[in-house]
Image (cartoon, rainbow, N blue to C red; front, side):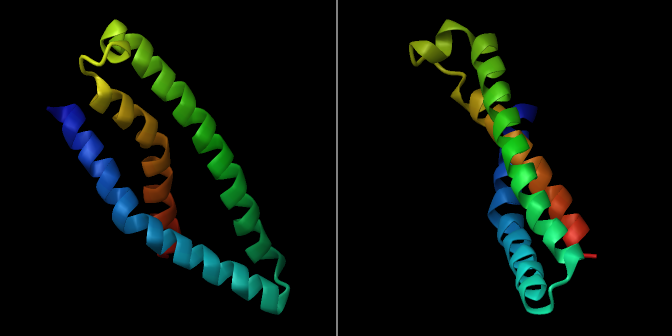
Length: 104
């Protein structure tokens, strides 16, 4: 049951916090384009590197979860929620952290 709560929490954080992070980063990038501020360019660079790291971590987590679930996933007998939760967790973790950081 805790795994399902984790999946729900990750989905909710992506649903509500991702648009806020996108808006804050868009505002920072616009400000950087207008003012030429080097500190705002750091945010754009960070966004790209975080996405690449999250994608790599997500692929590894999904593969590990599929290996743990074994044949059940391959033949369609369950385990999909655990694989989905493992794949979403890296993205949701970063979205929550960025929402907290950018809200300051």
